[in-house]
Amino acid sequence: MQLSLRLSAIADMVTTGNRLVDVGCDHGYLPVYLIQQKKIPSAIAMDVRKGPLSRAKEHIRQYGLEEYIQTRLSDGLENLKAGEGDTLVIAGMGGPLMERILTDGQSVRDSFSEMILQPQSDIPHFRRFIQSQGFQIVEEKMVEEEGKFYPMMRVVRTCPEGDGNENLVSEAAPYTLEEAFGKFLLKEHNPVLYRYLLREERIRADILKQLQAAPQAEAVTARIREVKEEAQLIKAALAEYESK
Image (cartoon, rainbow, N blue to C red):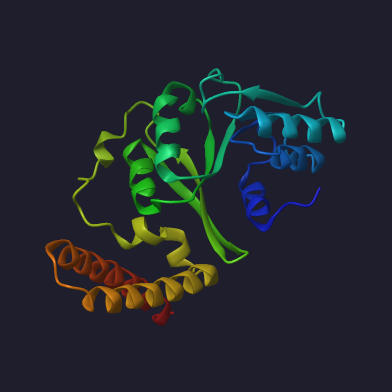
């Protein structure tokens, strides 16, 4: 089976020998591929929608892997028990939805040895959330596919006995460079992140031009300030590349 660039990058992050749980499995491509590659011994593919789960079942049957991959209709981790998997994958969803899934399923979530997470939105907030829950980001990747950018992370628990409260950061605190763009991506001067930053810099410049040409209502003034702060963060991240 051929995976998309995004799913291939996620597959590479899964630890060999781990049992996989794929939440929001869509067509079931990821577990099928990992079983075919003999990277994992078994998998549970879960989705909240009957349509995608039905398609996943068809693909699993097509490749004769029913013995190795279970399918379950589940809202997040609702129909999973602690200890049924080693690697949790949640990918291709908005950050707020992923936060809800991980919060609602906390007791099950904490039984995994690692999580591979790929939020589609609100990524700085999601990175802050992960660390507030007592997890540490230990690996990051970013791919560009069909004009879209996909950052992903592998996280492990750092506070087996704690709740992560020592990592709490005020919601009002400005995002750090690492929260906004990823510690490891910045450190390695990731070329995909660089292209993303250049694009975002152009977007912020265009937004500022439009806002500054608009009638200066209070809401517009606040938005200008917000966009300028975002632009400064992007500029600081680009400066990391210039120091290479």
